[in-house]
Length: 162
Length: 394
Image (cartoon, rainbow over all chains, first blue to last red; front, top):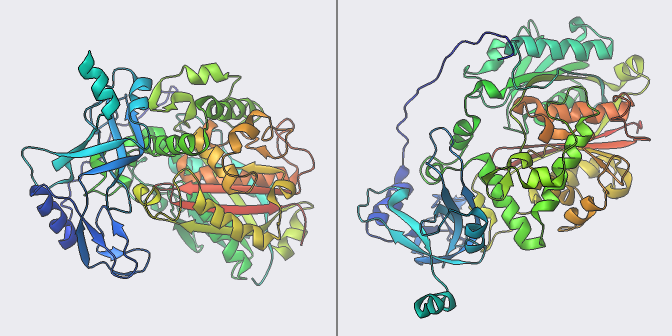
């Protein structure tokens, strides 16, 4: 290292993050296989992840609405490299606008073959429809569900023909 | 404002992966270089703004405390500014406001960073996102750039090759900058065949993790007239912030699109208005932009009003942003060629000031510069800061 000397060190600090009452309600509802979003009673914006305040109107967001279990990809990426303490590659993640929500929510997209990145990117295109798939065992965390691509009807018919 | 203010001295160390100097040592080297450039000593300084981003890259808690003496803070008013990647420009803004408000005659803005001493900077950067809802999905600043890239490609038909060309130009420009970390004559093919880190972002689409220090001296009009025949007048400065949640800027009823740097456009509008700039594409000759990924630059030049949304890829191919083009973007090589995060936006101010003062290294100097725009971007692409520097007294 540049003929210099270095001294190895590190930080290892543990935390207990407060979930908050809004977060608790959202996570409790995930266990029941439902995704609920907060709604601003002033501007009506339906927001995910849920917020206890409407950040635009600056008033409490006191309403809850259930959003759809399908949605549309707004942005995506595929990560083929390993980063320290981050998920093992390759993985695909996407921001999805769930039906009825006004903001996009990020999660893994699990049913895409990631062997060829450019091919996988074509499948994950913006505008593609995905569905929410709940895990069998749910713990009340954001990892209680993931997304899967909904196969377009045409592709499905072609596959079945073969 | 009580008084006009100008930059009369700039200093930068070399940028590289590792420095054999400690953080205080790098800070002091930059501070001394800026003071020398201004023809001043530390005794002429009335207050110090320390430009320090996240502590976690260094593994030293609140590193500004470690660096007070080395930054010239002893017996002086001293404050740290931190807005992530935008830190350096926010620190310059604080220094500017101190002087413009008439509180101090001479302020030193200084900082340093050593990003590579952290074994994996993306482990740290992942923790800027919400611990309940977002961190779990391996978000990094590279995934953030990938989201912007796919949206820019979707909305405007931007091609990976057009992004690659940003890296080619930046690396080429950096050959003229003695302090740049990365430089060389690379090709679009080199970028296109470099490995994907987060599709469609490839190795050469990304900035390096650098170590280095930077500093500027800002003084009041009265002092500037005495010290320098051609100071860089600070004619406009603004910063605007936005949510950490990227998904709030996509689809639905979003007021903005993550493809566009709309927050930067807001900050630029305010800074241009202060500077009296009506047509940025005609009145600005140099832009030093905090664009840590190639797509960011394409999005930013649109937000800065150099062209319409979606036009930057084509204009870049036509050479509009080259050294001898309509607006020279990142003559220094910019953030793609050196990123010591805490001071990268301050380096943009240094390099913009050098252009305005006519003191850039010979091949890096753009001809007939009257106005330069410098930017900083931080957090989840959520802090955007803009400074307009001018050769002309107003």
